[in-house]
Length: 109
Image (tube, one colour):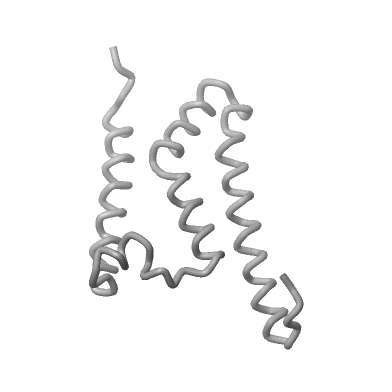
């Protein structure tokens, strides 16, 4: 017997719909398969890290973390929280890098 409810199906359906809408909205920027697969090889390291993090934290990871948190409490949600922290730190680092570069310091990495 399954505990899969209408609410669960709705969440998954909404996620898939949002993904499809986002894909349809950006399809005008993608002209070749190479641009779709590797962003035309013009992706900087920060966008690459964000892309990999978003791929890793897809629907399966998101739903698994939610289920694990429900079954095991806070300890089960740790993977999702750590993923959030990692993505946040990458974003903050990129913001700091842009601000320092704006003031002319080229040696910041």
